[in-house]
Image (cartoon, rainbow, N blue to C red; front, top):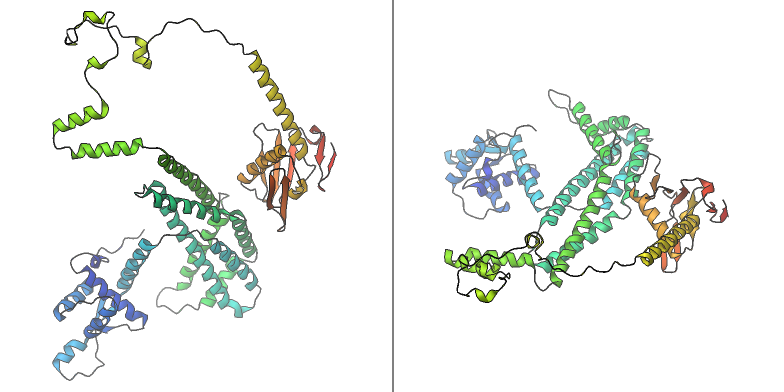
Amino acid sequence: MRRVPPEMFRFTTGDRADLYGAVLDAFGAAGEHLETALGLDDVRGRLRAAGWLAAVEDEELHDVLKKLVEWKLLDKVHNHAENYRTAEEYERRNLQYSLTRRGEAALAGVRRALEVLAATGALQTAVLEAIADRLDELCLLSHEPASADRRIFTTLRELEGHLEALVENTKAFNAELQRLLRAEGADLDVFREVKAATVAYLQEFLVNLDLRGRAVAAAVVRVEERGVALLRERALRGAELPPVAGEDPAPGWLASRRARWAGLRAWFLPDDGARPRVEQLHDIARRAIVSLLQVLERINESRRRSSSAVQDFRELARWFAAAPGEDDLHRLWSAAFGLGSARHAHLAHADPELIPSALSWCQAPPVEVSALLRTSGRTERFTRTAKVRDVAGIKAARAESARAERAELALAWRELATDGPVRLSSFRELDPVVFERLLDLLGRALSAGPDTAGLRRATTGDGRVDIELAPPTDHRTALLRTAKGVLAGPDYLVRITTAGGAGALPAQRSSTGEDVAG
């Protein structure tokens, strides 16, 4: 990062910081009206519009303008084109001021800082759709004649603007989300509502996020097939950059466009084969949902309990902090934790009647302490050995349960096995047990990342069954019916096989949804 000039933001500190800022705001507002130079009276007139309502003496305003010139935020120029009737009029109207490049940068920096402080960030799926639309528009414009160069320029800048909005909003929202995860609200009701609303917001954002990310990646590939370098050259012609003395601005402009395109690929289609950042965003959102739900559970649990140990210790700490003296601290400690002399121990002598109650502990004969009491907090108790339980019945019941589970699992795999890719809707109606196995397989596949062909692959924990999931080529919906209800979802292409091959199962499901002989 290049070093910022040391006096660039000096105007934001000191006793006159508000007046300095109001004067620069006045120059910024004048620039928006294409007024490049202001005299003393012009500055005074625009201060009220900038929000400065207090009276300012000429001498004080002169000092402020002089300081801003000294810090190279303003330029001082003489207006020799005017006619002046008096010396006083010459003194007031001849001297004019205008913003320097450093002044423009300082004003923009302060405004940007205030925007960031006020921004909350957002996760907007509409931005992903807008990026895909602009990429598709670039594909169409690539076939247009040279007259479309200006449209290519505006479309490319809109694409970069959407990408910048996605990055900035996501970064701000993630920072706000992490602060929310660490925060501890004083009002538990409001705190709980905010976190519950955030969970719902994240869940809504995650819906079809994978599909939108893949759509943008596919659009990037289509644009690059038509030549992204040629599109940048045409956009440069459409930008109509003004001539600048010295260096040609075109190479710098093209380098900036290449950097923006590299940022787009990093988000959706990295060159080095790394995970796209949009998938990392997916993981962050899911982890945040889990963390927020855990926090909400702890809040609900603390509300269900009549008291909270954490709150009790905090209240006790406040009592200790407010204690007036050291004796009060000792009394509070004794009352809170009940620590006293050794006479409070429950161990007694073999014949307690021989020991007077008024005898000091240091004069009384010692009492034998069991080693078990020191290690586990219990004393030895000598009793008869308990009878050994007959666990033969328990073993038989467990063995029978294991056999039934294996049979149930084998039946489920037999019902779900396919002889090739089939539609998810071909399973139609399933037994609840088989349906749970299918849901487990789909969950494993959806949690795995897609390969270069878009396929997701997963294997069961025992390695016996493999599933291959391909995205649907259309927008059909699959309906799976069980005795407990109906599940609706995208009609994926599914292939389920066993480690033993096709012949390992007695029956398989064909691509038409019928059971065939293995």
